[in-house]
Amino acid sequence: MGGFNIRNRRSGLAYWGLSAALAVALGAGSFSQALAQESDPDATINIGSLYEPQNLDNTAGAGQGINEAFNGNVYEALFRLADDGKVEPVLSKDYKVSDDGLTYTFKLQPGVTFHSGAPLTSKDVKFSIERVAAPESKSSRKSSLKSISAIETPDDETVVVKLSSRSISLPYNLSYVWVVNDEAKDLQSKEDGTGPYELEDWRRGSSLAMKRFDKYWGAKPKNGEVVFQYFTDASALNNALLTGSVDIITSVQSPDSLAQFKDNPDFTVSEGQSTTKLLLAYNDRVAPFDNVKVRKALARAIDDQKLLKAVWGDYGTLIGSFVPPTDPWYVDLTKVDAYDPESAKELLKEAGYPDGFTFTIDTPNYDPHPIAAQFIQSELAKIGVTVKINVITANEWYTKVYKAHDFQATLQEHVNHRDIVFYGNPDFYWGYNNPKVVNLIKEAEASATTDEQTAKLTEANKIIAEDAASNWFYLYPQIVVSKKSVSGYPLNGLNSQFFAYDIVKAE
Image 1: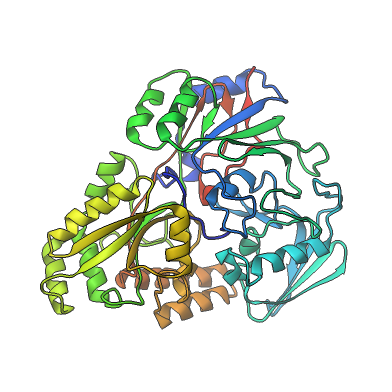
Image 2: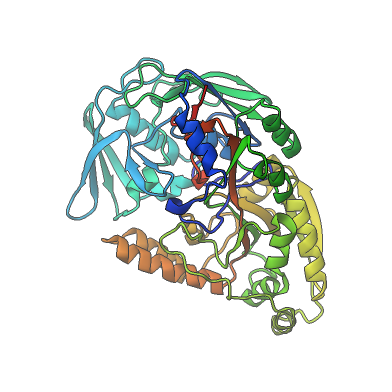
């Protein structure tokens, strides 16, 4: 879905409390061993994943699986979000910003070709930006591009983007705009990108294969082919690694399954950080969730630590807002509306619900959502609130909740980096609408400096937490497991991307 991604399987990506520079490789010796051995430059890297894309177009509701497989591998943008969270130039060779901050001029990398053989030109970039921003686009990142008033292409290597208001995050936001050949067709089942790999084969329900693109303009991949093998069951995925059918698992799904790899010298277990948050989102447009006291009461009635322990054991970390520690405007807000069931009862009385009320949680049918829903049901019953659970598929969730806003509350995972901006959009599916937050987020985007932007978004973050706009439970641990002969894969799961070009397999 472009900038906003939900998971359509059980998730295992999140923050485990480590900085990118200090991410721990529990099997560090295996990394050294793999690097010390000679690698095969034409190796096939088999990656096990639970996240098959629904289609191949990130503007057409493809889900987070397409980001995992294609972002930076098949498609590139003017910029990319690196594994350490920094924004780096890719197809943009350089750029300059006018003194008033309203005009960005980008110079493109020379000699870039699409997989079809067509040369990259400024018209392709213009087409790609307009495609993401189009009304029919299902990428919620299109709202982050609304300040673009015009795009000019004075020559094949120059793109001029004119803004109606300052947008300090424009380079960051453009990292979500995959540059596509403007003559490409059938992008839900085909591709025409500029990345180091081209699509070789997509067997729906089974695998997606990408082969090295020999005419790639940049550094060549360190392997010859990458195959994402898709599984619908975490146990089957783990068995595939144990039996050698796959080389890497992009995310381990539970502490129980981790044990079989952690103590096995044939595997490397690595921990990194990501941005995946489990939350209970209310429809803040409707009663009783339009009442801040009700939302705060429910937040205080649920023991987040107990929920995290039940799902992840000793892994994962609690959060008190939508902002993970990888974002510059992070503040530890876990003490806001901390677990306090007696206080929750008092708030319900003040809100006019002394005897509680009944509501329905629409929950995706994949773990940990049904388990979390039952836990919430049990916790809220203790303060007199009755929860009905409606289990739905990912596609039903997208239609019913995300598009139609036909819900009272829902469980969901959000995977994106720097996505506090969604709380500044009253039209977003949860309908949170605090004019002060809307203005702060708008002013932050118009900031002249990153310090000013950070200060405003930090303030917005605190207000959103105090408003209990949603109920944020925890961040998932980011755990990648591989054969000891494999190295070079990304440790962090920012936006669920999984860069494959540096992965090597020892012979």
